[in-house]
Image (cartoon, rainbow, N blue to C red; front, side, top):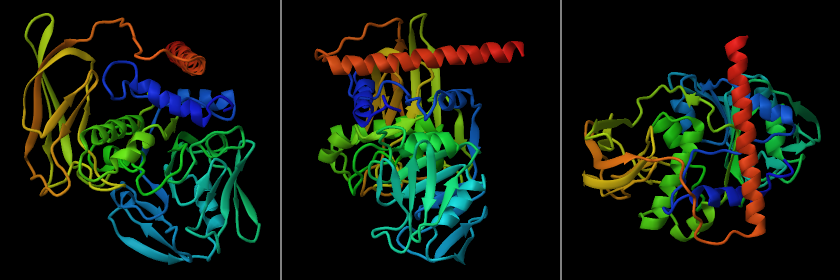
Length: 417
């Protein structure tokens, strides 16, 4: 954790957009870290899991869409929480004014696969109530442990063992690591988090790098958590470049360097939902010769919907991750407002704020000719890298090498044991 500083995270965001000459993110990525080396090893040895139940310490619609529902505690109210059942029924329950210790008990019950928080935060704390702390307490982290401390100073240790996603949806700085006392390594170490997601910068009304992830994870698509993080980054960059109606384009220039995802980007963590997702992706490939392919990528709307930016915590543009990298792309046709064909994904700009919903059964696509990318490729940076940047790059390469080595050991272990 001493190396995964906020500046390191910002540099990784820039690096992952700088591996080729387009402005988009060039790989599904995450930063492997933890309080100890054992934490990192535990994460990469994880086989994956399904998100079926959510504990949301704020009011978000996604709890209604998850297969087994969950619990919502409004951060702006006290004395109540909502139990959401698998059929979408919401039941209000009276609870103590200070919910801090109750929330800790819910986390420690090992019944929730995702924890969502919003409100005031920092690298080592989350304030349960918003905007003022009274009458509730804090979750704080110290030396690899997370504590729930009520307003009367009574405390519970967070000791949860089931694998989960920690999602700092609406918190300032909660993704920042400033040492072993920070929340991220503590949740990974003692809270069961195998993915920890949050901002290393302040969070505010124009922060979009967290709120679009559930669109690709739950509502619109069925990507893994790391893929959903990746897709949301691409959508935000597209909005910034193309001045798409809705988001604050100037703030996005800062926002795109602010998200952190800690974990294993290859980990297969998906959501089981009780709804029909907005659309279905498709990819059709026809080989024209030994080199070139005719490729059609698109979506079929499963219901009326608005697949584009419609709010801070809302929908986003369809992003289709390609099963292989392509180059020498020539777009033949599309019925989207605009289609981006990058080497590893396609983005379809098919709906914008103010448009009527797209109709069920409608198809949106881009057809292009391309060939598979030849490897290896030389990476040419436009600007000379300074010493600090080179250090960050070396550290990232070291993490990748260690991860590959661990995965090979895991494969060998599974083969012979």
